[in-house]
Length: 475
Ligand code: SF4
Image 1 (cartoon, rainbow, N blue to C red):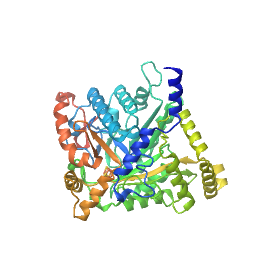
Image 2 (tube, protein in one colour):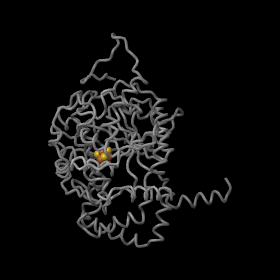
Image 3 (cartoon, helix red, strand yellow):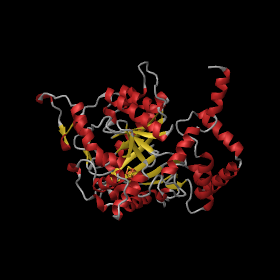
Image 4 (cartoon, rainbow, N blue to C red):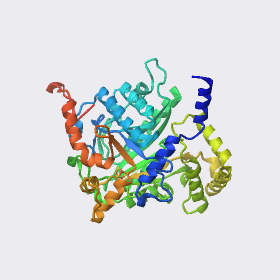
C-alpha cells in the first residue's frame, strides 16, 4: 500500500462509516409510522439485531416451551454445513442491512459445535461486519471455552467473545441439576458460568460480554424480581426476559402462557431493581415486542443512565442520536473510535457541555458518597416478547400479499412485524424475515428438510445415551 493510500485509509478510519450512515437512513425510511418515536434507536444508531437459523438446530437440554420445531433435534450438527450457511446468511445481511450490526449465533445449542467450527463461525460473522453473540444453555465447561478462544499454537485467536446464556427452571437436563425446583437453585450455575469468563480474562486476556436470558411463564413469574436482585453482581451486562409464547414445538407447551403479560414481567423486573425502568427513553422497534432500560447498579440500587422524566436527559439522548448516531461503539478498534469521538466533539463542542451537565446530574442522583463507596457497574434490562404462531401466520400471509388486516389483533401483529428488530436471512431467495416468522412459519419445513440432509447417525441400541426428559439424548 502506498503512503497516500495509507493516509487515506487512516483518515477514513477517523470518520463514521458513510455506508453505515446510509444503512441507518434506509432503515429509518422503512419503519412504520408507529415506530418513528423520539426514542427509536432503529435508523438512528442501529439497524437492529440479526440471528442465524438452520445452522445447528440441535440442542441437548429440554425447555418448556421450546421455540424450535419438532424436527430440530433430529438434525446432525455438521461444521461444514454450519459455516457454509452462516457465510451465505451473513453475506445477505451485509448486502441488505449494511456494514455493521449485532448478530446472534443461534439455533440449537452453540456448544455442540466443535470449538474450531464455533471460532470459524464467529470469524465469518466478524468478516461480514457483524458483532457476534453465541447463544447457549450454559451447560459446558471451561475446557470448551479455552478450546474456543485459543488457536492450535495455544495463543488467543479471539480477543473478545460475547455469550448469551439461558438459565431458567423451565429447562431440563442440566448436568448436576436435571430438574431445577426453582430459579434460586440455578444461581450457583449462573455464577459458575460467569466466573468461567472472568477466569478466561485473567488467564488469557480475552475480553467478554455476557447476557442472561430467561423465559417467563406463570410458573416462574413471581421469581423474576429475585433473579434480578440476586444475580446483579455476577458479571452479566444484560438480563433479558422473554414472556413465553405459543410458538415452536407444541408438545412442549405446558402452561397457559397468555396469563403472563409484558406489563407483569416488566413490573417484576422493576421490583427486583427497586426502581422504575422507563422503556420509552430508548426503543428498539415496537415496544410491544421489545422493552429496554439502560443503567447501572451502585450498591443495592439501580440507576438509569438517562432519566426519562428529565427534559435535560432527553436532550442528551437526542444529541447522542444527532452527533454520535452513526458511530459504531462495538467492533471499532479503540484508537479509531477515540479518533472519531475527538473529531466529532471538535466539530460540535456543545457535546462537552451536555456531557458535563449529564455527569453532574447523575452524580447528584446517585450521591457522591455512594459513588465513592460502591463500584458502579452497567447492567441493562430487556424484555423480548415473541408472538404466538397462530397470530403470526395469518398476519404474515397478508403482508406477503401487501394487504393490511381489518382485524385489530392481526393488524397489531402486522405493525410489530413491520417494525421488527430481529431479522433472519434466506440466501436461497434473497429475503429477510422477522424471527417470529422464522419460528412460526418457516422452521417446520426447514428442519424437516435438514433432517433428511443431515440425518443423525444411528447408534446401536446397547450404546445409546441415557435419555433425559422429553426424549432428548444426554451428552
Ligand atoms: S422477532 Fe417478533 S417479537 Fe421479536 S421484534 Fe421481531 S416481530 Fe417483534
